[in-house]
Length: 125
Image 1 (tube, rainbow, N blue to C red):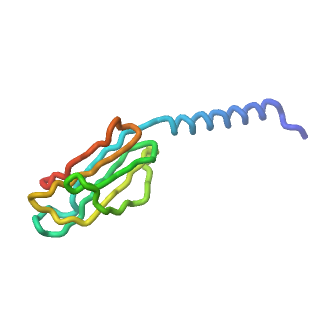
Image 2: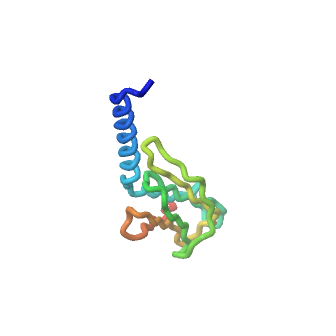
């Protein structure tokens, strides 16, 4: 039994609409939201963990660095994950010891940003 032309056309249109939707998802870009915080309240000379949580970005290609006085720190990164709205999020973290002299920050490079965005760690937040 040969397929009916109307069903073939409906199937083709449905496939075309799905392809258009998927391609549109990739074309939408979202800038990252950056949050820098310590795991525990900051105490000078007491070891802690510095976190940079970057969320709400698309496409998924992103570069995240933790900085101490403007120089890259060795850090670990979680696996890339996505939210219900198909934007992505990551956590980059490292051990550090706060003090009064050093400045800690997070630098993010993403296609939606005209230049790298740097967010300083605020020990009071």
